Length: 403
Ligand SMILES: Cc1cc2nc3c(=O)[nH]c(=O)nc-3n(C[C@H](O)[C@H](O)[C@H](O)COP(=O)(O)OP(=O)(O)OC[C@H]3O[C@@H](n4cnc5c(N)ncnc54)[C@H](O)[C@@H]3O)c2cc1C
Image (cartoon, rainbow, N blue to C red):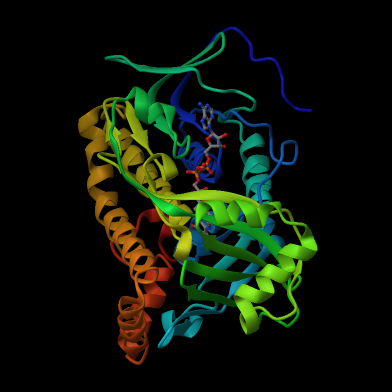
């Protein structure tokens, strides 16, 4: 077990990151490569030592470029399945688009969270400018005039800037007094891994069932990540069934959508919510990833938003340092919220619209399905969907630019 005693000392650095999920680790690497001294504290054990959940992520091709720019693509590719096609079906038809519509070899990649974390963690561990602390729960965050502090037991981390990458229940966000507003859906997502009965051919597929979407997302070795949205109580009950009972219930609900699928992993249930912080920065603080915004997972965009935060924040901090500003000053960080707010609001709004429309009473579902089918017949609209899903629209930060 790699959980070590946290020393009683004061550690000084440029940027202290709270949370070592995929967003925190990627940010640590992006900042270290720009020459900043970084400390990252995560409450959990190092990847592979704790219990990993069953989530797998669609990483849009625009965001995948961040990993490429950080030199991680070679380590990630053996675990990643290219997504060549996206199909979403409503009651009156649906929309599908393929990688060629955005002139890319793949719309993105599906990768299991455990594999992604392991690669990011190993890269951060090997980076001289990053001090990586696991099993290090942050008890307190404070923001003084000239420095910010994170307290982890008797260890104090002092930095010019603290970035909260500590997820939906962010302690950094609360300590900074930033409001987090939105609502919970009366729904939960059950996530697990399936071995498929027929080849997935790189297609990410989603159907809208009356109580929410069900997605089957391609993984390596002809496996797939299943995301089954249901009422919270039902999702919990499905998670508690025996494997045989679960497979029977899945066959009943999904029918021809996933023929002859077998369970190939543990089941986990995630509550669903839509919440966005009032701002993503303040005096000596910034927020990235789920600490800043949590959205419905139905189009696999939550982590993609977080990775875009990372790329934008790295540019904002790098530019502030280059022109001699204090990287923790509110005025130096203000461009970060300005840059990210539009994209986050648009994506959150779209997910909310889909989630509501496709769980509404039948007439609304029919209209929504018809609208989606109509959009699917317009090549320009399909191209736009493909580029949006690929995270390749708008003002793109340097880590995401085409190389
Ligand atoms: C079922 C499901 C499927 C999804 N699929 C996709 C997808 O396909 N594509 C996509 O883009 N997004 C997807 N998402 C969204 C994605 O899971 C999140 O957006 C992503 O995990 C956010 O990463 P993060 O690093 O910001 O936060 P987290 O992954 O929540 O990590 C936060 C980290 O902070 C640490 N932490 C918390 N509190 C403290 C503390 N006090 N001290 C120290 N450390 C602390 C935790 O240990 C954790 O490691 C999905 C979500 C769900 C629920």
